[in-house]
Length: 489
Image (cartoon, rainbow, N blue to C red; front, side, top):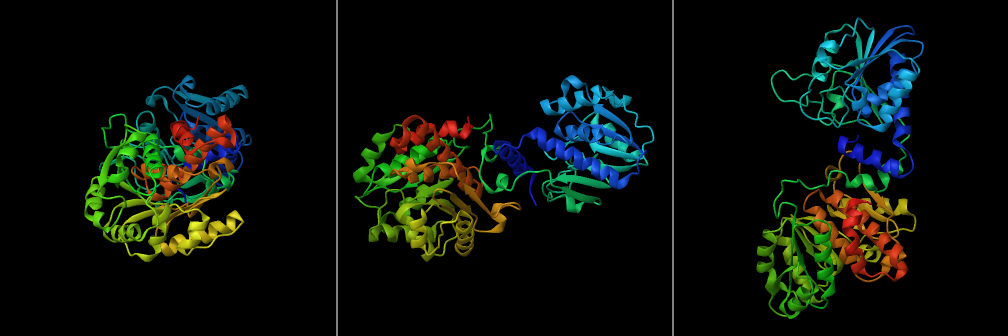
């Protein structure tokens, strides 16, 4: 199954793979026509009630495949207000072919007559809220007819994810369909309807789901009415032996969209870390290495943030290992774990929600397995994520992202691959940038999606940097290009 949000992402990823929306609409319309043929005999009267979006466009295509039926297309609204180019093209094709059409400018003007079958193509799975006019009156008239009803993608007025009406109240209005033609994969709510559901393959390649792509960025835009802090507060805990690593992670988190980023690091390097950027808020820890004596202060600092990025530059000393062990045992929030902190994860029982970002060598050090073939490696990472109970993002030529539980990834995701990035990103510090980017995203979305999008945008930033600098790029080049990668320009 696939949720409506994920379906929108897959559609966009398919387009990025070279499968245009116009081609998908043609396949969807053909599928609708096949469903009509399965229900009605040739010569039957068919009323197609079409909205002005791509859902309506699917039915406009279907009308072209129904020459041996008595077809009338009812467009709800003026043709000039059709919302997409491809739907408008299909309307123009119908009128040029002199297929009977009726423009419904007012709900009172809708006259279905007495059709044998009605196709409901008013609103697709992305629509929310109560039906408005003329769709509201159209839904009532469809329900009041004696015709069989075939809905395109989802009955108008029904939430495809829940199977419930999109409007609250005692008497919400929605189309009571007999059959539903949905596309690519089943939607979670359709099984709850008293309707026969057909899932039509419309030619979306498996890679559109398997690989990250620009569609994964959909829905990440911030609320224009949001205030400081509402788009994520991130704490980076690390540094001591290294000063650049925590700074790279923190600056990447800011460039990926976090509102506030704090760095907790040993006082011996705090001034140096602060010197990398005036945008960072630095909280010093006594001494020159992170250790168990910093546990209470680190937990207090973490409590005021949405996500902790744990490990950049922390080193592999015994004190650092003891701190990570005790911190994770006490912490019950969300954390991105990177670098030397990773080897502690399999040892501890924690209530924290972790996103671990090892490269393949670190994965093996944690007890996982790897392989040269990306699909075989994906299966191994997925299995190990299940054992750990935490999300894994394993870095490589093909990054592998696997959720720690089925519930976390959603009904259509088990494991994802990311192939953005280039060999120039083997330079030191790019992993720290990735950890910070994932941390910022994890402040506002679920861990699995944060890891997948983080891999995609960090690799895209690396590709943008390589386009300008070749393989002489450095980690800070990625940070500067993260905002562009997030816009996917």
